[in-house]
Length: 358
Image (cartoon, rainbow, N blue to C red; front, side):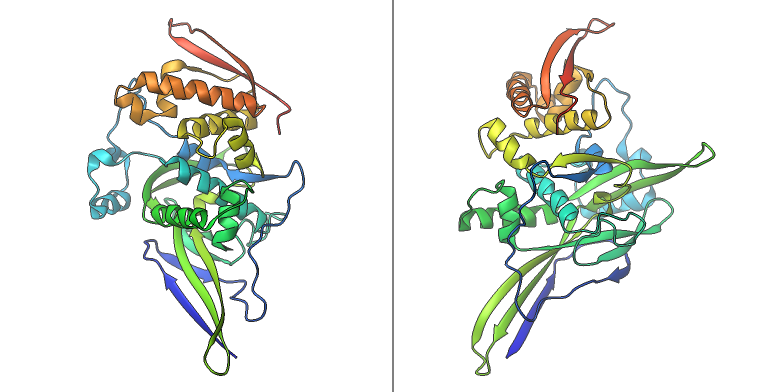
């Protein structure tokens, strides 16, 4: 019998320094793509830098600086070449609810499909298809970009929180993945690594970059008469290094069933972006052992929906925020909250989190 392998790499930017592969397409029995059962209480690590960039927002009362004033020449040129209007460029990772949910799936898969026991080994959090070394940060140091392999069935099952899925569900997830592959985001932050003498190393990361690059591979089997016997489709994506950078020291633990639990708490698979952002914000605070975080209501509304606030739709933001608060309470993450004035007389909200939440 003969096997025919079709490989298609969707166009993407980024200088590849070196690539390593740990496996290739199967020539015997292909994997079915079914997720392994995970034990109760299982969790995965999500990059703290990734979460920080996803929660970025611009607050009008803060000092405003033009994005182009702080970018390096390479990043600014990348934006110019993209032909995106300047006023449409914002810092951070701004996602639609479906894309946010998909990223949660990819973070879980990166954990479950990677070597996660020994951070000293080069394959730490690099996925199950090897990795590519690309230049990263202001010093251009080579850093691994993970490669993940999965079937669309497997990804859709994760996206639906383990519920039964249909062909329409698979097509929907495929479209979300492909849409995300076309988008670039302006990343701008510092990575800090402490030194033994009390000092620190700082790496400045700037760039107008994609979060994923899709590589599509299909394995088709033919018999001696050149008749197709079977076709096993596999999806491989290259993840931006931010998915794993400093994940050994700066990370947030997520329950592996967070999508299912959020769906149940919200009462629908169509969880709002405001709910997702509030959940992630409180999980970040909980991870940092800040169990009673507080923030002014106005700033909270901008963090949860900067777009609607700038459009003057504050009433809608309040309504969705109320629903989000009820959802994180139903999750067990939030015990209760109170609203009071801060020292400047501005209303603030104080969240009281469940310390033992898992």
